[in-house]
Length: 305
Image 1 (cartoon, rainbow, N blue to C red):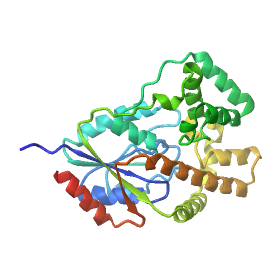
Image 2: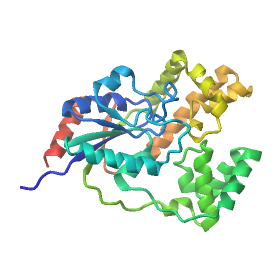
Image 3: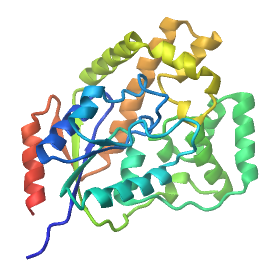
Image 4: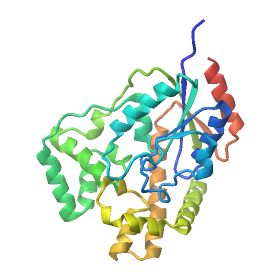
């Protein structure tokens, strides 16, 4: 009899759609662990603005990669891929099912398919782009990437200067679009993968995002951002919810304008998440609000094969 391969259940969907709650229901049903693939929930200095699971949620099931790093530690998607695979290797010895949840599609893809390999680029190109950003702001980077690589421009966070610069240095250094180096296939993994996607009407998603931002502000987001303002140039802080408040602290936005900008940029982020996810034909979609028992039944069927 062939021993079934372990199963990684990936919970994906736009921000504020209820991925955390569903992942906990699944983890409790299968008595297993949850790995977060949210690239901002790693950082212990950022709690409110990253919608870190509550203490009650963290106690409901064992979690990994939640507030396990500092914003002062360099941490890349490659680091996450390596550490997540090490963690999965250990967990799969005891648990036939493990849950991976998060809104960072690049980080989920890294665990499932492996990272792309990019050519080495002269450091002078990065220095030129960093200088351009320092003197002219982010708009020239956005414009150049939209022309050099319209495919990647559609799915990247266009407000994250670090990611724009990374893509542009490859475009400039090779004369080819950054997206042309993205993997078309996948690496071999020792586990099977089941994608579970949550979706809803756009108006519902946007209403949930707006309500979440209001709740964050009520919970002390402005005060949290103020404690991080001195370190605002760090890559970890190039994040919706913090950037807008940094602009407020600098005087370019009123507090009301900053809060509205957080809502607007969060809605844009959700739209990009959905664009990314729609390209994945392997996702089993469930409409919000989802009945956890239906998802658990699907996982049970997949696990038994």
